[in-house]
Length: 568
Image (cartoon, rainbow, N blue to C red; front, side, top):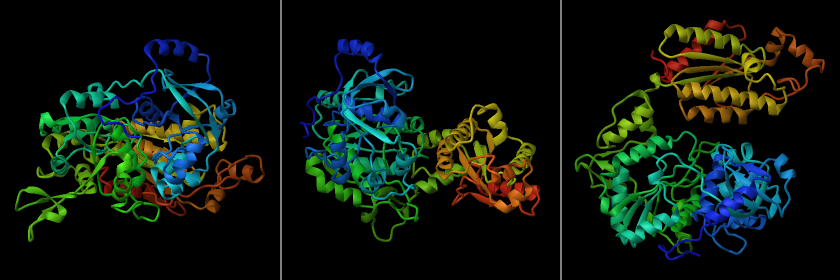
């Protein structure tokens, strides 16, 4: 399917005149507000980044992709690109209907002509696409806990591209990049995919890759959705711009790719290759554990270090892009330069700093040596990631009603205010219910909404350098994880499980709630008629049985000190 790498590639947009007409007509269609991930997918469908796809996958194409990485017609395509919607919306839609697809401000971006509607087997999708139905994988967690239950498929009519207000000059469609390469007379282009800031080892690696392939270099970082906890794309792009002048201008360019990554390892590598082929590149650097999500529930890596390279190699011809092996680069002290790890001269001292070690140094305000990174990059990273003792954070208490959460939270708030330095806000379950969630009941859905509201407020406090203390019951693992991800984008999340037993909580029953729940007068009461899912690995576990509040609050203070969040 691959086109000659610099010829124009088909897009799904209609002409400007047709788009104006369609916008008016689309006003009367049922409309779906796209999620951030769906907007990323739609943009690459419309601009040809996902060529040869003409829309969201039909059921037959989806089955083929999940089963053996092929569309129904046999074309290689490793990633399900699906429009997931909730059951309520799906009930009102039938194949044969058109729906308007809108961004989060309500702007109409495209029309989907629905040909298929089905409920997928998500456990099978997780197993086949990501290698395991394991919630430790961010995309599997997304599949089960964020994505809608029903998939809609069908061709797309593109009306306009999503609006980006940031780094406009750095964003290129596949056809814009192809035109740029044509204009400069570049025949061979090697692309470097990254979701991390660039350090000296990356620079050395990309230099070598371009030299080896005798090609020009495209630095092509992902700025859509990456792994929860990654450095935000604003910081990363400022880091890339800071090091761009270290590259020869005549043979290097940078463009931003608005892709929602799935962290799917081997399949993701093949997918990245196909996307880069659509952008006009001829060579692609594939790293060790390319797009790997880290550890599974058993603490082992999801994918083998070379699985991605092997799968890419197997399909290289069909992808239409030549793989360049990513060499693990290390700094050799005696030579004062970088070497591939397997080419280090005998007896030399090797220096290396892992991503974990870099984060630790940033967190603790420690020195980052110049042989490792560029001063400009370190400056940018320090602006966004000041030492932990200067960052905002959230302490999130969870436990049964009557376990002592609110009491410890109040004591902790007073202790932190006594220390001073950062504003402290207490978001107690009952208080939030009164002011933020007074219209909500106590069904699972409403409780989830309430916890997510608390999480959102806490994330804003954390982002702005304050301390948020939350004390809801928060009985469900998936909801606590969603809140953790919301907050960890901006600072530390410290989960404290107040593990006081049900018997003890019931014996206290200050508000008489357990008694009413036992009599069946309160439905869906946590611990009685509704489950409490205990946190498996909280940062701290405390039990208030026979222990005074001051002691419990002090345990939290000690934990915060050990994490570097407050000064000892």
